[in-house]
Length: 187
Picture 1: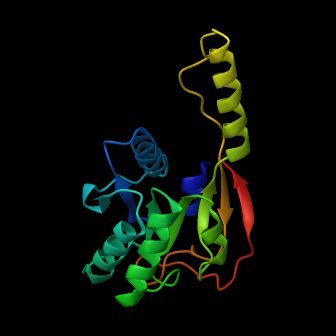
Picture 2: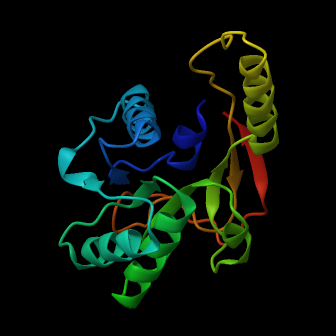
């Protein structure tokens, strides 16, 4: 099961924050979100795909908009942790609490994900391995060699913290988990 599918399990209305055709990584993450929904038997709803960039303020605006919606999603996957933290705060200031009414998942597992309240569930990338591959590729190129590949994909993992929970009864009937320890799921 993919990391994003695991985080959004049991949710039927799952949004995405950060659709942006100018960034390849944003398009890849959005495609992964759509694929996970489809594998779960959920038709992606274009109305739940919010355009944006990687800024906290973008997430804040999206969180505010979701909270004011007559039919908000029960979960949202965000382009990055900064957007996810903005979504949590924008939603909170507009009366929609995480994870009680809105589960939020980020991407990158940056330090603020650990410190936020609630602590952010996020997709972790193997940053050290990515850096090592980048340096090795640059060294080989400086020696006149072509890169082994123009694109390399590395496995991610889901770090489950307290910003996600089963859907609230007002969205989709499910039992609520009050506390969940950090757990990592390979994706």
